[in-house]
Length: 413
Ligand code: ADP
Ligand code: ASP
Ligand code: MG
Image (cartoon, rainbow, N blue to C red; front, top):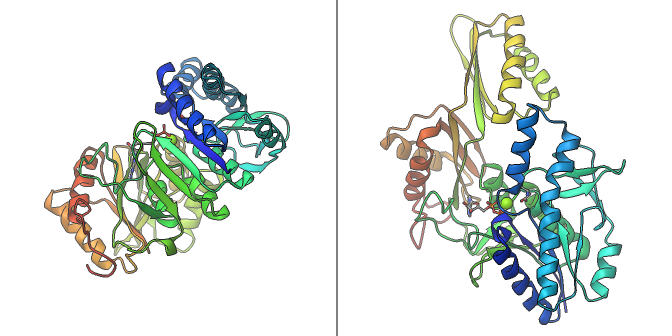
C-alpha cells in the first residue's frame, strides 16, 4: 500500500460528467488498496471568469481580495468531487489549503509554500477517506487566504507528495504527457517518455505551461518523480526525473514559446559606466523581472539598450524606464507588445554554437526576423514578431528533426 498523490487540472474537471469520471478513476486506485490524495483545480474557465469579474469592478483589484475571490474556484471542485465519490460508495473528504496545513508567504496572488503540516491529512487517510485538497491555495501567518499564482495547483500537488513521502506525483491533464513542443500548435509534436528536471525547468520557464515551473523546482529539490499523463486515456505519460536516469540525451529535446513578454528599447543612452545599473535597479526594485537584455554601442558615445519584461508589467515598466531614461539624457524610449520568444531546449547541447546556427538558418528560411537572442548551456531563445510564433515553432520542430523517430543525439550536430 502506497500513498498516491494525483492532480487533475481544470479541463479534467470542467463538467459534472468529467468530475464523475475523475471520481471513478480515483476510486479504482483506492480499490487497489492505496491511500489517495487528490489535488483539484477550479473547473475549466472558472479562475479566468472570477478574475474578469474583479477587473470589471476595478482596474487594479486589491491582491488580498483577489485571493479571497479566486480561491473559491477550487473549493467548488473539491466539494463536487467528494459528492461524486460518495455517490459511487467511497468515503471522501474535501480540505481547503489551510485545512490541509499548507502555510505560505504573505505575497498575495503569488505566494510561496513555506511549510506543510500534514497531521490532518494523515488522520483522514488513516480513516480510509479519499482526501481531496483544493489546489493553488494556502494560508499566511496572519490567517489570510493566499494563492500561489496561475497554474499553482501543480505546485500544491508536488508539495503534498513531498510532505507525505509519496512515491510519485501524478499530474493528469488534457494531453497524454510532455511533448517535444505544444501539441496544440504543432501536430507533429511527439510525446517524450522521460524528461530531466533541468530540461523541464527550462521548458516551463520558456513558456510550456504543461507544468508550473515552481512545481518542477520543488520536485527536483525533494526528488519527487512527476508523471504527467492524460485524464482521458489510459496510456503511460512522461516521467520527469533526474538526468542520470535518461539513457539517450537528445541534442535538442524541445521547442517552447512565450507570448507573455513585451520589448522596451531605450535609444541614445550615454555610454558610461553605471548607466545599466541606474536603469535596471529601480525596475528590479519594483518587482519587475527583466528577461532578455541587449546593448549596442555606437561610435558617437551613445548606446541603445533593449530588454524584455512580462506583458502584465509593461505599462508600469514603460513609465518607470521613460522617467529614468529622460533623467539619464537618453533620446527616447520605444515599447512593443506584439512580440514572442521562441526557444530550443536540450541538455545534450553543451555548446550552443551549432544549435544557434541551425536555429537562425531555419528562421531565416521562413523570412522571420530575429529581434533579440539569448543563450544558456541548455537553450537558445529568439525574440520575434508575435504573428510568426506558430510558424516559428513548427519550423524549428522540423529543423531539429523532433518529428522523427531518431532525432540527432548529443554532439552530432
Ligand atoms: P491543466 O488545466 O490540466 O493544468 P494546462 O492547460 O495548464 O492544463 O496545461 C496543458 C496544456 O499545456 C496542453 O493542453 C498544451 O496545449 C500545453 N502545452 C504547452 N507546451 C506543451 C508541451 N511541450 N507538452 C505538452 N503540453 C504542452
Ligand atoms: N485554477 C488556477 C488557475 O487556473 C490554478 C490551477 O489551475 O493550477 O491558474
Ligand atoms: Mg496547468
